[in-house]
Image (tube, rainbow, N blue to C red):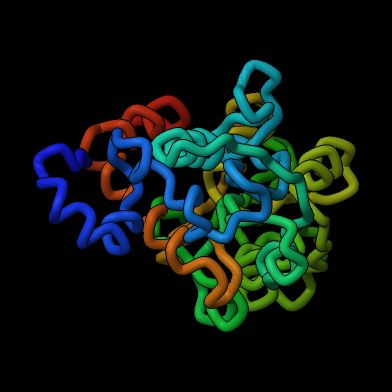
Amino acid sequence: MTLLHISRSIAVAAAGVLLLSACGDDGDDASAEANGDFNLVQDGVLTVCSDVPYPPFEFEDSDAPSGYSGFDMDLMQEIADNLGLEMSVQAVGFDPLQSGTVFAANQCDVGASAMTITEERQENIDFSDPYYDSLQSLLTSVDSGISSIEDLDGRNVGVQQGTTGQSFAEENLPEGASPQAFPSDGELWPALQAGNIDAILQDFPVNYEHEQDDEGYAIVETYETDEQYGFAFGKDDRPELLAAVNEQLAELREDGTYDEIYAEYFEVD
């Protein structure tokens, strides 16, 4: 959004409001951080916390400006660039991120980690507008004999600790199934490959990535859960930054950048 069409007198009078959008080309308006309005952990830097790896949303990439790529990371990089900020990524565990601990410790400005917006989490953290619709899924080896969640009786099922996938498993697994919680997908996937667990129940895009990478594994069932991801912020901590991120998300959708990034990581019909 450009501010060039606004007269200088109006722009000065409305500067406090315009800085929330922080997406013009003008140097004074491009980054509200310059006036301290974003209350950033580090001046001039958007510090992003994420539970890495979690492809296709976040993974290490030495060629990326921040050292990380993925759907979340690329969106956040666009937002940071448009706000005139450098982006720095801090790898953290998912549980301290979704509980708000990392924000209370002033470790990061925003969390980008494929996090589902839930009422329970909103008690401790704030969320941006939704930026991705997801669902749960069940991944297993093609020769496991598992074709549905009902077949998990007597089986070990891997879930990620603190996630909606874990909640769904606890509510829907058959009584004889044994859910096994892991810190991240970085431990879940090797555990399935090693035969330490019989299946993984987690977000569809991540399981789909594994299915594409190894033909010995397949998603046998998906579950509509009406989940939407949002970027996370400390509770009532950085309202100006939250407003700016929402403004940027709307701009990225409007100018087609969101669709370009989406098509890079997901199949588009």
